[in-house]
Image 1: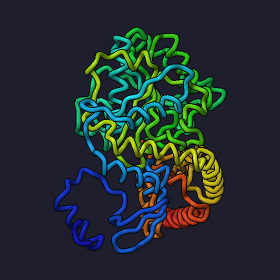
Image 2: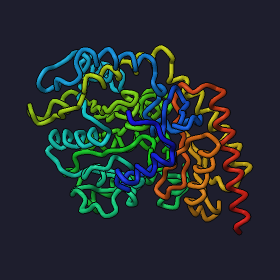
Image 3: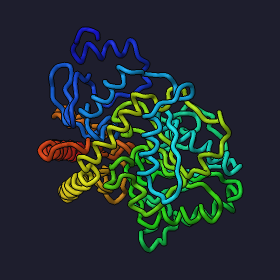
Length: 442
């Protein structure tokens, strides 16, 4: 390791050695982390409400995960599953096959990331159906590779200047009730956004050509939008009626975040394929594709693969994650955290006009900031200022939303009650200060 330097010295070196493209939320460098607490190289303490962007559901450096990694590293690190098989890959696949919703035979394969999981899910669906087209949604985020960026909705910064996009991608509105694309109100709308899929069959692409529909059960980067309870079941029914593979992208919403192990369980939907990553291995690179056995078995031998996918260290970490969830009942903990965060956010909304909407499912809770509640004009600058103010007070936050005006909470599910309350208090102080600045500028 290099000699320790100050945050400013390291940042100057970062500017020299690393391209500007990779974005940094905070201006400091980490020295250590445990649970929900980080420390920077100058010894400052921070409460983490981001969890490495939804990766650390079991907490930073969970002892069982660290122990598993150390034990595996002393035995073998990378034989490559395609060359020499190993037990941990099979054991973790079995865990996912059993844990994911669906009372049918399932199989799982591993890759390196969420984007790669989505890429392979689409490949498998196309091979199985012998169709090409894919339906995705407005405000969706599925990754940064060519295909996944094409599936992603947000243009800047994810797609701008990186074209052309992949072909045969068709986008429809998501059930974003706060900003309904049809100008309707739930429930009188009758879920027009879901029924719109049928219209697409006549106006854009016939159902007979569609291989898959991919949807986030709760939008992640799109702003933690929680759809009405009928939305996903209605989409699933349409897919079943037309032989379309239903893919649930659980990269961010999975692994207990929504108060269920997988978010689709809140809607009693059984996807044909589920993609996982982020918290699957507590920080080690790993993505999973779990689906109906007959769909997963469709591609020919050698048609699927990944040199590093299902690396032994990552698989051992993944098995440790499952053990931690069971021992600490983190799914129940997510519900408790979410209840408290949602309560505090609603209380804040009553006090501060800056907050236009509050929403969430389990511990996947967000507040959407607006310049004016009537016009709902997104308050992106105020959101960035809030993140900065909270960082200065010792709370790490991250934004979301197509307009960059949503504060999302992804704190580790092992966060203590005291740490949670401290973080929420810092957040409220930040909102109060930004609201004051906003009023003074008028």
